[in-house]
Amino acid sequence: MSPPSVHYSGGAAPIEDGGEEVEFASPPSVHIDHLDANHDDAPLRFRKIDNIVGLASPRGLASRALIAKELHAVSSDEPVSFVEAEGHPSWRKAMEEEMASIEENRTWSLVDLPHGRRAIGLKWVYKVKRDENGAVAKYKARLVVKGYAQRQGIDYDEVFAPVARLDTVRLLIALAAHEGWEVHHMDVKSAFLNGDLKEEVYVEQPAGFISTGNEHKVFKLKKALYGLHQAPRAWNAKLDETLLSFRFRRSPSEHAIYTRWNGEAQLVVGVYVDDLVIIGASCDDIKHFKKRWLTHSR
Image (cartoon, rainbow, N blue to C red; front, side):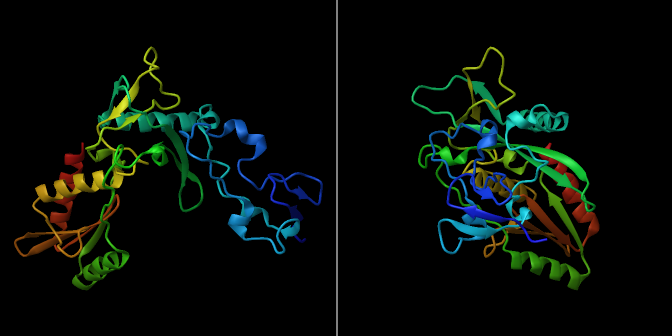
């Protein structure tokens, strides 16, 4: 059976041959109440179907044959807003775990907004983690700063952070295979929450977790949050400081590679954002490093 033909004239609601309206432009009108309305005065930027599957030919009113899966940009299991997620126990638990992690890390403090300063908005981002069989393994909620509202020179300055090139990661794995070393991988949980901020940044209280009696107050960030322009740099600076304190030496030609010698045994750590690739001649040295890292991170 051939897919339905769709007539598209650039509007928000093209008409399918069967007579049913199909929304191709975002935001869909039937879900407008569930979308995040707080954009901090930034322009709204939404994608149309032409941006996803290409332009119709000729332009304008033209017949488009589309397969349904081409339109699925977001999983139906993942909420698009806090309003949609707050009534689901699994998503509520995921948000509480994210807030607990932030509080445990002493990421912010509740303060009055200083005169002349502006608080940046926060939003919840939801992701379903699945196992190799496609079953739901975890519900993940991430609190993200609306970084597009940051102003350079006021809310942030430097943003660059080095990461290992993919060919360097391949080289580490090849070296381990050649030498018969073990390869270990560590994913640093909530890595960006470990980066100390130099700038003075204020954010609004997140939806669903506004302090009763302190609704007018905001959070002053002590450490970075996901979404901040300077978050990768702040995390990398913290990581660099930690590895150097562990007696590692940073490679002068590849700043995301760190090495350490313990007698004749070499230990190498490659950094790719919040993932660590660890190889070395001594299994005990690798285990000691991982144990010390976990202890230091608490």
